[in-house]
Image (cartoon, rainbow, N blue to C red; front, side, top):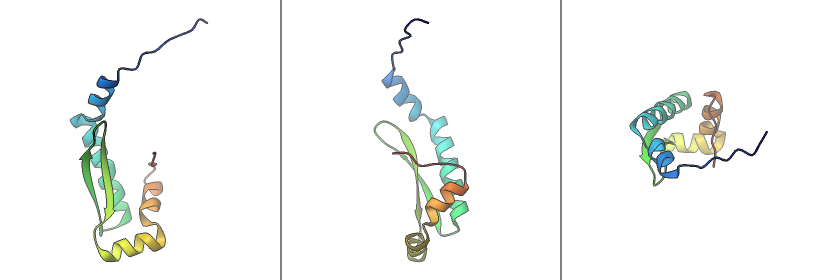
Length: 86
């Protein structure tokens, strides 16, 4: 088979990653992880320079301590079937 070349359309990809549809999916995933973690956790949608994302965080001192001791958010992320990428 011959060489196949692809050209990445970065402006189009960035537009897709920040689209309302993608943000809606990210918001739903963030809310789900927060609900798995517990009532003292929340999710907040964000749009960065290149992509949209959802932050999930402890919403009280008690939850922050629980997360520090037990890695609650990582466990909730794993239990939700999602993963975190850098």
